Figure 1 (tube, rainbow, N blue to C red):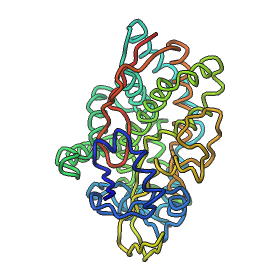
Figure 2 (tube, rainbow, N blue to C red; figure 1 turned 180 degrees about the vertical axis):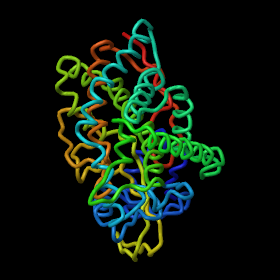
Figure 3 (cartoon, rainbow, N blue to C red; figure 1 turned 90 degrees about the vertical axis):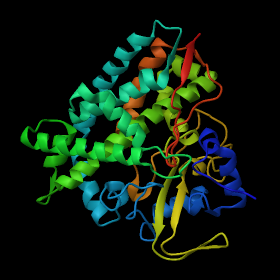
Figure 4 (cartoon, rainbow, N blue to C red; figure 1 turned 30 degrees about the vertical axis):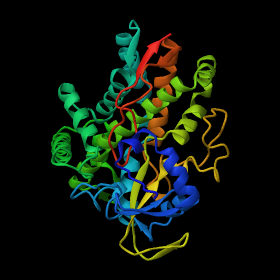
Length: 387
């Protein structure tokens, strides 16, 4: 009997065989382990993402949601409230603010490359990717660096789910409350001492006389730190993993760095870190011979949609010459990721520097340890050996 368990370490390690079974045999599947319906085909997921009146985010978009977050953040609201939040937040994320990321990103990776370039081996995730991600977030928000490791550790813990209890444990909830309190203190301090950073932009952003409420700024910053550290670090880690597993592709990028942007898009399609998100049905839906009831939760498997042969021919092949338009590595519909441009800029700059200094490497561990999460998928470490 087929089962799909998003909490299983086996799913973390390799979800793609299960995704293929879901797409081919069980495209609208009830998962007992998750307690929700599972959609796996590209067209079904894109329809859900663009049909918020039926597939609502207002009861939370995380498979395992934090208390008090649903209905209060950009990712967990529906229009018209979502449109108001998005417009205000987007007005704060100006092109000028993003352009300022280029040199800090380049400086960060150069600093951390200096620390590892003399070694025979290093951990890409913890020595480079995670550190660059934290550096960028601290730069964007002008956060004090005296507790950078504590911020990173709590952000990583927030995205995890206990594989035994199949839910957020007290430790995960404590990490969320710690981050919310940290963000609240940042907001209050920045209101007294505004600057030219992204947090100050959130506080002062105004459209037609309307501003973000303090609570909205706090939860936005909490979510961006959590998602930024996990998503950007995960993006970097997965790209590095693909570069290790597909050396011919890597050598093409070393020879011609102008190919990095297209290779990034293929990595987002082939091995996205954003695997699964949730919606709640506002009405009954008939799909593939199944009846999903109003009030039921639905899991949207982005990682499966990106490997759907119906959309992407030869989908299980990593091909950096492919132009995978409309992949769901950054979601889609009204909830497409606002940080996509920032992520693309940062990853391109970081890998330009990384592949210049360390063009040849191999993966040391054939079996990886994966972040236990019902939403995200990324390696906890990625040991690489220079060759």
